[in-house]
Picture 1 (cartoon, each protein chain N blue to C red):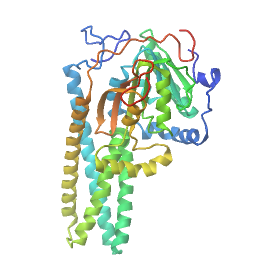
Picture 2: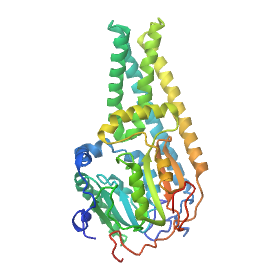
Picture 3: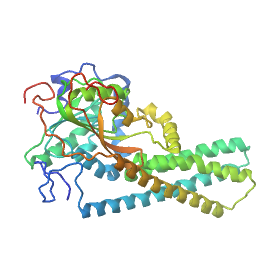
Picture 4: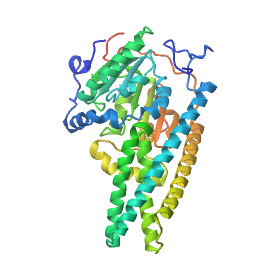
Length: 237
Length: 180
């Protein structure tokens, strides 16, 4: 492993991550760990979800690295984020993880600066792709999901810890109202992520309610390759 | 740590079974999970009650200023939403950002309106009476969230497809296209 943000130097992204999104997350990085430190409540669900990471693993939207503490030891993890400020803060968590994981003799966690909507990785290069509160924060979720599907090998697993729009009308209305404000800060509170995952061509294997039907732990998989076939939603596999 | 994964992918409960999505957690883990769930629910209740009482008091004060009804309503709603935002932000590091923000937003959007309706109906309640009524509504809402959470867990559990262990890694190239 060649250390921090390797993709930025060794293999430049197709589309340079930048513009408003990067600046926005650079601003948020300063207070992110204080305001989003919801780990006390969500840690168990995250750990349970992420223990399914296997082999080459891509973690999309690592942020300041709060989720690194929940990664299992064993998988070869590449964690990406669009913000350099976030990644700089994530180093501390990465170092702590590597120190713990090295005791077990297998530790690999690389941080890369990359846009989730324009991944520089080759097709089918990961056995597992994981996200945590990422799909709410990207400009085009369907494009990101299509990229995740591209880099995931057929039969590979998608693990998502995401907050989504509630199916309960009152809660959905509140989330819609909150989105009017939160969208300006880069977070959409009312995304139909489960539907988007299915439409992107993944098979949902398991969904666990973490908080009502708003925060979900989603396990999905990319259907095994069968040339010329399409899944139940008409997406070619 | 009863259901931590060892590097070799074998569950650490000593059974030698591979870790899988259908593995059953040990009793200790289930108990710890239940205790955690109860503790956070109590925290949620405390926050909902605080936001409800603070919001309704703010609205009552807005009415007592003698402003025209529409202006009082608007200012009261805005002020109670600000109070909710502040309290939920303070509670977020412990209770979770979305977990504290969403239920209290429902309360902050509805309870001050209820106070307004009561005022319109000519019911001039004392502060203690209003607090009691507000707390009752907040408690009922909290009970609803508990029931809804239970329903969600059940709904998603029945959707779950029992699958064997994850397929082993077969990718031969690293993410940058190099031979492993």
